[in-house]
Every structure is written in C-alpha cells, then in structure tokens.
Picture (tube, rainbow, N blue to C red):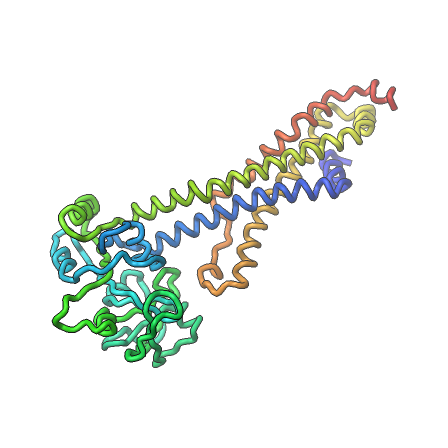
Amino acid sequence: MTIFKLSWRNIVVSPLNTILSLLLMSLGVGIISLLILLNNEMKQQVKNNLKEIDMVVGAKGSPLQLILSSVYHIDNPTGNIPLSSIDKLKKNRLVDLVIPLSYGDSYEGFRIVGSTHDYIDLYNAEIKEGRSWEGGFEVVIGSEIARIHNLQIGDNFYGSHGFKKGGHVHNNYAYTVVGILNFSGSVIDNLILTDYQSVWNVHNKDAHSEMEITAALFKFKNPSALIKLPRQVNETTNLQAAVPVFEMNRLIKLLGKNIINPIQFIAVVIMIVSGLSIFISLYNSLKRRRYELALMRVHGASRWQLVMLIQFETLFLSVLGAFFGLLLSRLSIYIYSLGSDNHIINNFPLTFVAEEFWLFPSALLIGVLAAIIPTLQAYRTNIPKLLTDA
C-alpha cells in the first residue's frame, strides 16, 4: 500500500475527528469566501449604479445621504432646491450633461422619479415593451416592478406620499404605464420614471410658484472639473455638491472597518481552531498508531516516509476543507436566492473570483503548522523502545 493510500485510510478510520476538522475548516473558509463574493458584488453594484455621474447637487445636509437618496434611492432626500439654481450651473463650460430628479412619492414602496429621457440613456436601459413617456402622468417602469406587481402596458395606478407602503394616496392623479424597461442590473430596475412636470402637478405646483427639484446629476466634460466645480458649488451657493465616487469609497471603507473586517477576523479564528482540531486529531492518532509506525520502520519505511504519511493526511484535510468551504459559500447564496424576489440575488454570480485564490494556500499553511509537532514525533520514532514497551 502506498503512503498516499495509507494516509487516506488513516483519515477514513477516524470519521468523527475527520468530520470535525473538515467542518471547522469549511466554516472558516466558507465565511471568508462569502464575504469576498458579497464584497465583490457590492462593488460591482456601486459601479453599475454610478455610471458616468460625476457630481450630485442637492440641498444642504449629509453628502453621503445625498448620494444614497439620489443615485441609489435607498435613503431620504436632504430637501428640495430651486430648478433655476441648477439652470445656472448647467451653463458652466465644464458641464456636459445635467439630469434633474424630482421625487417624494412611491407606489407599493417603489419610488416615482420625475426626470428627463436622459436618465434612461444614462443607464443604457432599453425599453422592452411600449415606449417612453410623452404626456403628463405617463410612466416607464423598471423590470422588477413589472415582474413583482404584474403591471402591463396601459395599466393605471395611484402614487402615495413618501417611500413606504401605507402613505397618503393621491387619488386624483392616476399614472398610466406606457413602457417597461429591460432588466439592467442597476437601480433603474426598481424605479417608476416619468416627466418631472407630472410630479409637480401631483403636488399642485402651478406656473406662478417657484419650481423645485430634489437633486440633479451632473456629468463633466473633463476630469479637472471634479476638483473645481464641487468646491465652487459648496463655497459660493446655498446648494450642496457631493462626488459619488468619493462618498461611496468612504462608505465601503467604513463597512469594511466596522462589519467586514470583524467577521473576517472571526472566520480566521475559526480556521485557526480547525488547525488545532487537525493537530489534536493527528496527535491522538499518532499515540494510537505508534506501534504501527514502528513496524513500518522495521519493514523498511524511512523516517521521511513517515513524515510524508502525516503531511498527506494534513493535505487531504486542508484541501477538502477549503473546497467544501468554497462550496458552502455558494450553496448559502443559492439557498437564500430560492426565497428571494430580488433579481440581482437570483442572478448572483457564483464563479470563482481571484480574491479567493489565497484561501487554499492559507488552509494548507494552517494544516502544515498544525502537523509540525506530530511530524517531528513521527520522525523521531524510537523503534527499539516502542517494541520493547510492546
């Protein structure tokens, strides 16, 4: 029997110890792998939703809140601003495109956003059915809204005040679905888009009142504007300018420091505990098999063959633990997706990512370190003494 096969047999002979070691290693690797996958997907979603938005202008307040509410539509807006103030900024020679946003109402928790057709073009979204809005109270809905609420071309619905279900319903103003967008994997999948004049009409804005919007998205002609224009807006106007890239990088670092890093630390501790489990398993196994090792030496096995016997056992446990850990992370996402209505979760990429490559060497290193003492014991096996004691 080869050393390789003998190592495998020794693992199979002690199923409880083997399962415990594999479980701990798989759990540690699986948690880290899951964090890597989620972190990668979060960064990809951030990138998908930022598109070519260089600056967001809105009411004074938190710049991060302005970005989250205007770009990702997951927070409350900081307030309203006069449309005339945006018209002045639009004339700046550094500005290439300005997209106004007006919102504050929703339908079944999905936000109704008044804007221009440039907003659809910004996300390279395509209309799957129908057409874009032309008249008042005509809407184009995202693919998720059409799927979840089974809305079709020609259907009517009423918006409600606020972003949560149960708000005051605007019964006098019915929206008509004239278009449905293709799935794009961006925030636009969850929005109801219309002309911002329709949003004003719902809130009884007449021609004599000052027109206000919630925020405006800016695209610059060249990168130098990224340094000049936001500072100029913040210092010389009553508006607030925020740079999405800066704010989202700050948020990702904050999440990494306060959430991801502590969880990764726990996962590393679990992997180290799995190493201790491997050490205890090998140590106890050697105590039981010391006469077997002595007989192997008598029958011609060298010291290095005994060393390789222990190392192969470690190799099996470490590689299998890492493999099952990677499998566990993907299985967790798949099981969660079965009960989720989120299209992004249901289409979550489960392929191997480059950041996971180091998990295999790390698992092997922990296994090798755990096997040092058992390996030295096997190498120093005293044949005469063991056989005499027997």
